[in-house]
Amino acid sequence: MIKINDLSFSYKNSGKHIKVLDKTCLTVKKGGICAIIGPSGGGKSTLLKVLAGIIVDYEGEVLIDGVKVNPKVHRIGFIPQNYGLVKWKTVEENIFLSTKIKDGKKKIDIAYYEKLVDKLKLKDFVKRYPGQLSGGQMQRVSIARALLLKPDLLLMDESFSSLDALTREEVQKLFLEVWQEHKVTTIIVTHDIKEAIYLAKNIAIISSCPGKVLEVIDNPLFGHINIEFDLESINMNKKLRKILKGEV
Ligand code: ADP
Image (cartoon, rainbow, N blue to C red; front, top):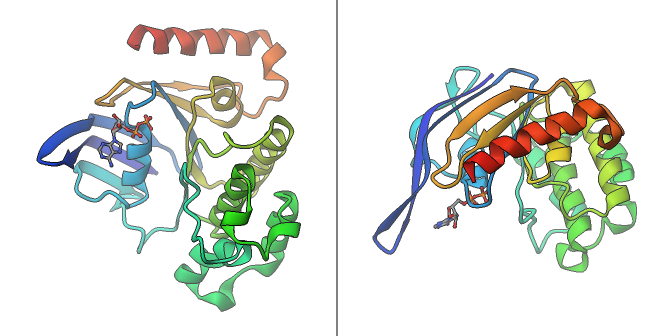
């Protein structure tokens, strides 16, 4: 279970403090999938960086299963917006990286690695370097690295945004398959309401900056395909847009 209580954070730039998160709260059940949607600049990426243990000088409480978030203690798979790949390592080395650091090279599940590389269509690129890849390919490498870790908490920051429509559908499906198998607690930041409805069990709406979670709604349409043409989905889409518009 992820529990965020009264989380506040300010960036400090040349003596100025810019408040980005303001006493926000969020709870995500163990094995849950929560999408976070809201206006650009509302602090969504910052919230993920706190959960990933990258930002540590925050106020408030951020707990995973009752323990203060700490990447040394928890297994956190983070797929950042900029993919976070190491330029001088090959695709294969990048995918191994988080698991190697956490468990050592010998513990890497090679069969699972091969499955991910196959499903994410990375077979032909494993010996390449990030500089030799397109944005979509780098995004898939970042996804493979996070999934190979078999994390307790998976954090996805616009993780399907660079993929073309067909690949996006396949990778979203792969995510749901992996989730069915491992039930990893997941937080997805997305600007795409349809994606939130398809992939998340709960949808949290965050305000504009400084960000605060305004509402968390249950999503009965989780995992439904063809949601575009479904009346329930159209209504859910309208409801989310209304909440967002009211705020923006
Ligand atoms: P979102 O993901 O919702 O678009 P972000 O968390 O990326 O929002 O950013 C929230 C606010 O914090 C924005 O106004 C952004 O300009 C600002 N910001 C992000 N990173 C930094 C930084 N390193 N230093 C100063 N301000 C930042």
